[in-house]
Image (cartoon, rainbow, N blue to C red):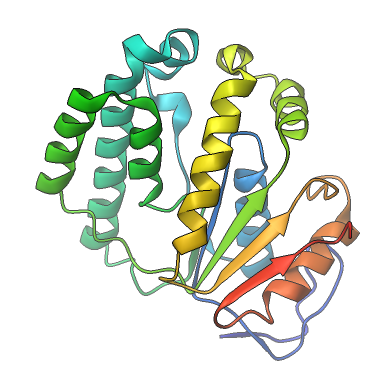
Length: 227
């Protein structure tokens, strides 16, 4: 599939550019992955496959009491992922193009950060009994940002449950994401320094990123517009 002189919300055209069939956007809380995923879906006329944190009844409790609510929070997200993937299979939606704001492998990353030894063993036992064979992305976009930027964006979006998120937790997740993507090689990877990028309010930032990501067809790439 290619874009043929298609004007996008960023007011640009990309004649003849081949598109990745499945894009996954990842990154820490508040980094902007859902915003970017939705904009890409609108630009390319893709379906979206999005996380639904608002449906997790344990999440607000987890942010207040991580040790006490970590296991039910992670199991809820895991079962939610399983249901989403089963729905894809039943509806035969593996072929149509789409964009997601998560990788299924992310569940294991969060579980390793938040669960104690016994909880992690139980989580992994449940994980092994679920069928979680999601389609492999044609492109993974990993958004990075420093802690102060994440906290500012979290405050600005004003979700009450997220007010309890502390820097220590965000820093731990940043480190976990860095380790994970240091070894990631299942799909072409674009690592984006999003500190100076405002996809939502600056169309030029978005346009430049889209033009760059369409050049990524293999390997590992870095996009650092502020350097």
